[in-house]
Length: 445
Image (cartoon, rainbow, N blue to C red; front, side, top):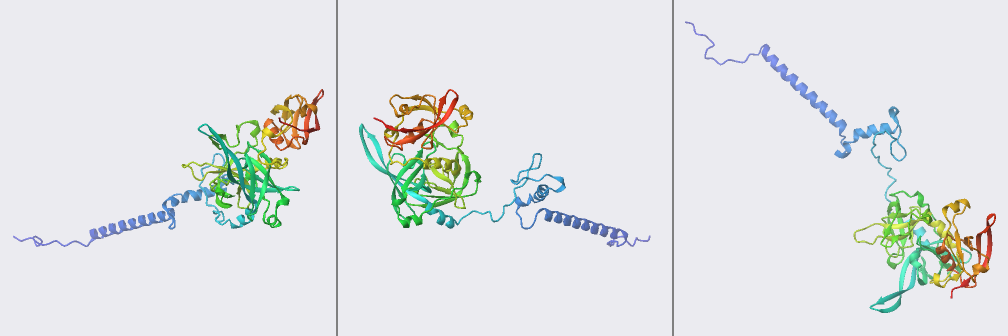
């Protein structure tokens, strides 16, 4: 019987049609894998640029789409100048700002220009103490800052905070050249915490007059949150120093344990013009009160007024906006100069009482403000001058009067026997008629 030749022998692989098919399948699989990998790499590169990080890169495609919409492509509405999108638009991505809009670190030019406008103010006042039934008083010293805001024929005029000069027996001002001069009170506004003091120009040396400057006022209504801010003042009584920061907030109200900074209620009619306060993180410390808050152009945009002095709070200083303060400063500058320490109790006397004119009456007679006289006391200068109940007092020597507090403040600058000009609306059968009368003021007994 013939044996099969293939039996017991190792079988070799065939290299025919089956082998070629397997090789083809392998090549096709490798080609598909390579194409797939290449496609994945291309997609990844398009989504993730080489110079970006993950957080930035994830928004890359969205940013391009947003730019197209903001620029007005494909009929989309453009965003406004603030980067917001009209109603119905998509939320946009904040764009990078120009490199020129950087934090200002070198303020030497501004300081060189404005430092001569800022002064240090030192006050002497009496402190009353009551200790275990024993009453005694003693003199103490305080300090603050001021800004040179103008001059008249005989006086250099400086604005500061009311609380810097309040109850002072003596005021001394130190200028940029370290010279000092005595100051008098021109006018104060307790509610707005503002005061103007005056120095006789004749008392200043020629070298001091050439060293000092009058400050330039800015526009606090145009301030933007985040713009640089510079504060100059007599911090801690050591002399003028400079701090920098930014405008942290505007129209900021501030109330401490004694109530609103301006006194009273900011909702009252008398405070319709108040723009509240500027908040800044430029360091403002005791002694800075009354000093200047400046923009990068060296313009005064605020009068530094207070600082939250709590250990849990840092970088929250406040300033009175100059756009709010400026008309008040102008009015205070027009008042009669008086010595420090003049109070309502020892001021000249007119002999009337009244209330602020109502809003309806202001509109009817086109008045900014005035005081409706409710009573004229017997045997007083007002009675002798023919002032009657129902008249409206508008001003004393061009100082506007709106209520009894303003009347008292205005009279505090006069001595007994002083002659003043009163502007009134006199009541008559045909309505009110404006009239000016001269009155010789009396004195309190």
